Image (cartoon, rainbow, N blue to C red; front, side, top):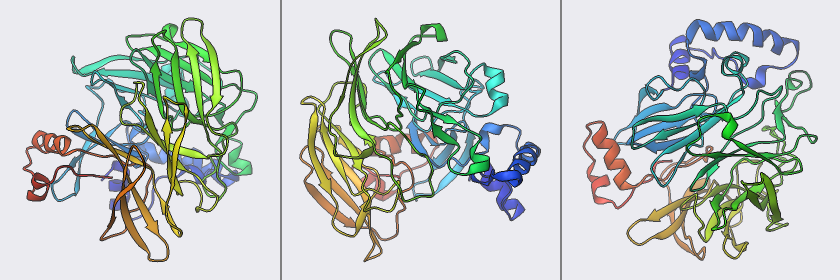
Length: 427
């Protein structure tokens, strides 16, 4: 139901040019003409991309996200259908894209950021990245600024993490490179002469001068971090899958190598205290924790394996013990079966944590939903789905309480099945 979808449906054909079409001389022509064609149909360029990367439920509103867009709000109906509401600007404040991975902290504040390759926006804002905080108590955006000096490159800043007192972003070694127009491959490429840096931002900061940039001393990239917290002495601890030489080419069966890595940062000195690879053998990505920003025991990542068909399909998942600083357990799916990302399902009444995953069995051509114990990885149930469930990019577990609040916000009554069930999942 996005603006892009609506326009192309009315025209009866594809109208918007995709990034992969910008190749060679023909691609250069498309880049020049395509911009003007888009401007003819869309006033705001931050509403062009498909909002299909991730979802967010915040303040009873359901958002579909893409890091090139501002959030696209939809209404969930009790029968599972979606209705478009419109693009969110938080009171005409958002003038920069929002990433697909904003985070809700313990105060209920929404921490967000994104980056852009749009030259027009970069010139207007004075930088290719912007961070913000929506204050739940005030009901408005409390801070919103460019966190770094203007650079001659655009860094792939897909995600963020946070602790009790800080939001944490990064300036990685993967940069936007227009050379792909002529020699193919991804438009984002690793520059091994550029070090990975963490940007540690106090949550009450309001300017780039307050950002603490910490150089890790070597190249690398982070896409989906696991967790971060502050120790009693103020040390910031980050657990994340880390890739030294990331290749973002999507149409290949080759996979990147991500190793679970622990960073310890000192925000007072602006230096890395320690960096440790937790496990040298397990290739992992797509992370999930029950509660981000606090020191907890277990976190979860998907297992990448050459036996699965390329990026986005996984052979199993890992349970990481962040207190003991080790791999707790690796769980693999049965032969001939691949899974999507692990989703954390938490029972607030008992604090019990479960892991939910959709898998696909190639021989049966059948989708299953698997539910595991989050502590020991034991399989609790295996449900045969009545239809195919594509993995997509990212999933979201929505509790019954959240869903009821969403229905009430839109003046909808719950269906009998939702009322009777304890919780419900939309992915």
